[in-house]
Image 1: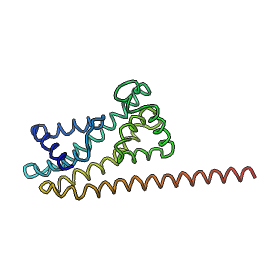
Image 2: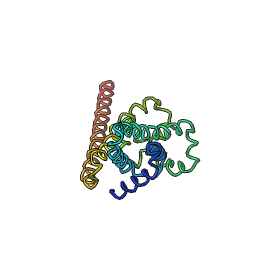
Image 3: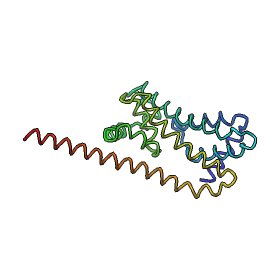
Image 4: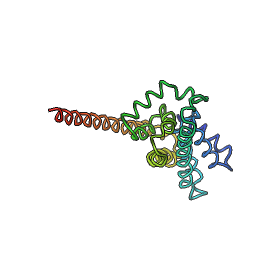
Length: 218
């Protein structure tokens, strides 16, 4: 991962006069499906903020704003495309390969069980993240402002953690690798805990409904 971070840093610094613009564009493209390790890129952005902080005391603040904006806008673009094109989006590449009928059925099943909380879970699962955001727009069951509120809140925390990790270890990059697995475990654990809580809640709701129906039958 450290080599990937270094590659991102070299690429961004090659356009140092347009650092923030380049970072914003790449994050928008990543949200649109660019095969990019967003974690590594956000860490690289934090490292750059740490390096230029000596010359620009607002570097970290600006970097956080740029990264958070890029992540949220990238997700919103996918939601908007799904909302605008509807099921027609499945005719166009690359969405024809990403939102296949089989995957759409699975997403609908998961959404039925977990509801809007599935948006929170998706933030930490790259495989389903982008397809889910398109799906949310396609179904038109979620209002745009609700999507922005839920996804935005989680994205602020998610993005800030990776950027701050890079910032605080800007001059000790080798130590970053010690913390990445732990952070990923925390993210996965939170997602797993949320899923378990939703399953338990769903089971309890079903049981109560059955009990009410049984009482009415008696």
